[in-house]
Image (tube, rainbow, N blue to C red):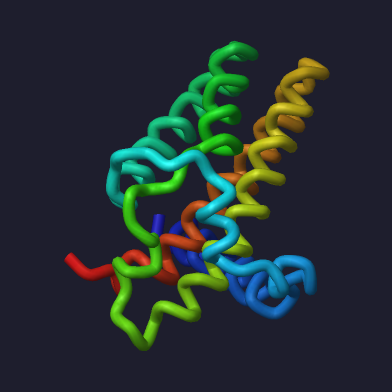
Amino acid sequence: MPNKLGKSFKAVIALSMSLAISLPVAIAQQSAEALVASKRPADMSYRDLMQILGRALNWIQDGVLLQNKQLVRAGVNVVVNHPAPRHKPWTIMETADQEGFKQALLAYDKILDAKANAVASAVEKSDWMEASAALGELQTACVSCHAQWQHKARR
């Protein structure tokens, strides 16, 4: 079991490093403020949003496992079309971490949308093995962000 955890952790770190190094110019030029403004506002906290996205990931996981296209579609729709919380998301971080977290929000919003859409695309072709592989990439992206930021959030 320790080897599996070690390999998983190494994969998360490798993905995190590659994402940090290879941010596309278009992402870097957009602002976190514009990203949040582009989302439908909702009366919920950032924690509430993360819980909803976690449930959406569960739907996608269950949908792939059960070969239920509608469950995958519903989960992907939540990920891709999620609203913004009632406050600026970066305010959950200490001031010193807010700029870095803004950049992470910009990067991971695009990455999570792309990975979720890759699952949906595979599911539409009924290619459940491809969907499973794409789901693994989506899950890795989720864990990568959490590994970088969750411990820094104000409680």
